[in-house]
Length: 424
Ligand SMILES: *Cc1c(COP(=O)(O)O)cnc(C)c1O
Image 1: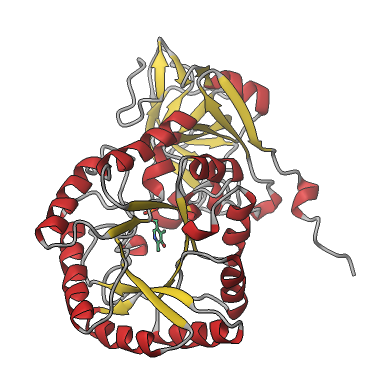
Image 2: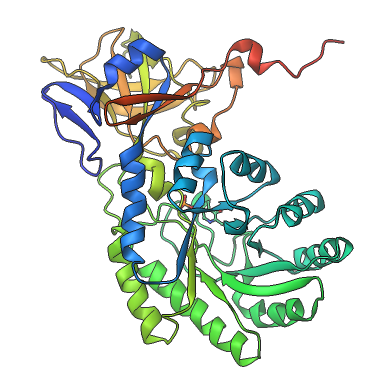
């Protein structure tokens, strides 16, 4: 086995047989901080953001990082300092992003199930916009805002009924999904919203899915949304901004999503052609800003060769890396030090008492107990989805900046996991 480059991840690379993130040897981090350990590259995150910023150069555009992808405080702080707004989906995320220095006016609030308490909290904070997902939610938001003597800025999330061509669990823009208002109901819903005194209509919004690797669903969704903008404005309701959501995919396993700047060159050309080029734009990228900036380091505990399968048991599990168990997702898994010699085929599994607790299947690796492996593309929807199942404390996180290492989250202890519990 020989070391190879890792396409799509310029900040994570072998030098000789040793894997580095920026200028830091990953093996040194595993030794210093233990495993499982999440490690992020600051320049990979800022580089991913820069691709969007280049795409929007000279335009009125606000990038709102969809913080559910990775909501660790230092990462939010990094994006806030870089000028990002945030797309939140709960009152908890609102508190979290404010703690990290997010600007209230640049926060948009998505989600199908906002509670009255969350609406009040967001109105008190003075967020930029509520992305409303149903007619019933409009009425409740109107009532809550009026009771506070306020007008809630709203955008309605429309469901353009386009197929994002991604995994069914992360496709959100089709008729059968729980998200947004049906295309046919959109105009009537805007007319209703415009008549409610507690609401101020400010925009329109869509988000068609996640891990989208083709341009065409975006182009189709934009056409469908702009048709609606035509109709809504013809009815006398002015839309200050248009929000095209997030969803751009990353390279997990040879996937070839368009680059953010190339995608936006195509989308902006369409926007210009349809006469909306000077409108305030918003986007809500999550995965594409952080996914390939992170790895999860895990140590090989035991090798368990068998008649049908060879199992390699590692110290990271589905509570740390839930995507394979949830979506049968693929993460590349590579050694921190490449060892010469023959590979065998392994299923990499965690210690949790579930057959669904696997990280990778049928991987050709030359392994020994004590080796440390890097699970790639672990920056998005891993730590933010991590749980304490099996009373496993959540992993530690470090952020690498050149040759500097910042500890951004301490490893959770067992005592941390039951701190709020009470004996009888
Ligand atoms: C999850 C989500 C996003 C971000 O999706 P990515 O695929 O991570 O870019 C954006 N907008 C909304 C409403 C979401 O729910």
